[in-house]
Length: 306
Image (tube, rainbow, N blue to C red; front, top):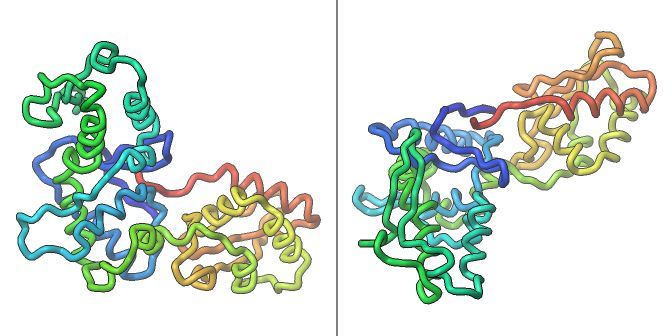
């Protein structure tokens, strides 16, 4: 499974390259539960997903780590900080940090209250961060409370129903006593795979179709790939598998294959991401192979969450 496409359910933040839950209110949150269930199924079946959720998401998935029997008990409510917001909305977090460190008179110069505004389908709506918040000015004395309530609103309260459905969907598949022992970053690895690349291990476990590992084209290929900088190595992995992450079990679990392409050597390499397969023409020189491979992996678009 390489793609999950649910328009409008998630917002992509270009500055952080992460998706986050849309705060738009709706009558039915079943699609969020479906996304959670699909993610849980991927973990259960050891399938990595090219899905860009911030670390805060996995912290919330473990809050609480065991699904409560009582549906009235809040789920997905994590202790969040400005650092968590930085990972998703760095510009907004930077502005809030400037408010915290401002040396002048906050009340006079910022003229803010404990009230926030959000656009929902073209309509600006206001929300009070605390009872009567629209009438409480932000001052030097209460600005820390304001920032904490604002972060909690963005990452917890404003998306509670969306994330709650997502939480129950995920845990309907993955609920176990073992899960509560994991750290958020370990859950992320289960979902997305390991970000650490070991291409020597990939070379060792690669299978060949039409080539032998001693063929000149294959020797050239590994000379080029092992010499790539990390960003190009990740692009190669994404080009051939649909994800730039490594499965939890390591490179051996990728079942990576290089097949001989009988097309003209004027053609670029192609891939079949469903099979983790690279189709490589028998280029005559290492220079030509490097040029064609670099063009292919640098100008390809894979699947993603939109």
